Length: 277
Image 1 (cartoon, one colour):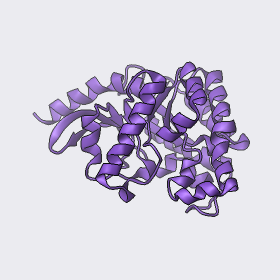
Image 2 (tube, helix red, strand yellow):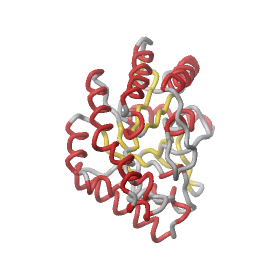
Image 3 (cartoon, one colour):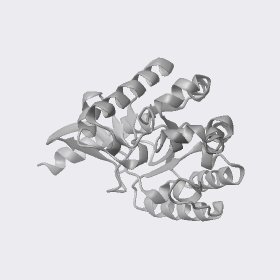
């Protein structure tokens, strides 16, 4: 049975971290202009290149954006929304959650929540953590704030419904893995871990291999990218290669997380009910 009414779900998501990829780790990096320029490429050049590619293929996607970037670059958020894409929650400052007190984590949640409401006119429906970490209060806060989906966990290749504090929730998890992220292939910086720079062909080979298996098994594919990386000239061609490969297959839905989650939730709820019988 297909997960969605339109077949195999392929999620193309973009974490527009920009300068917060550095300042979220150490605020003092804001005083290093060349480091900051690496992040600025994401909003100055990369996002526009990504948006144009998506337009060429008629694809709508989801952008996870820290609240501070929303506040600083409201004109860019308006462009993302105008082109039909979703804005989703990615903290306020991109500070790693495990370095925050519960009060600070709640402030990060609230400030970014309000930033998205202000520019989009609606509450965010999805949440992705900075640097793939959560605390004991994170999932209960997602319930409290009424989120519909999370894209954080690495424990499956298929979506599932979360249980939080022993209670069933409506929150759909859209699982993720590092091989489906562009950062392990391309994140090169003298102050960040990894310092890797692979050929775009390596990323495309990995992602096509992932797609072929996941498609054959009727699962889903969650791709996470950063405009400051995937938006560079040679790398945008790798993303286009994945899109073209996927579109050669029947019944593939490339779309916004919120819309695909709404479509797949009844199937997941039915499966959960049957599993408890």
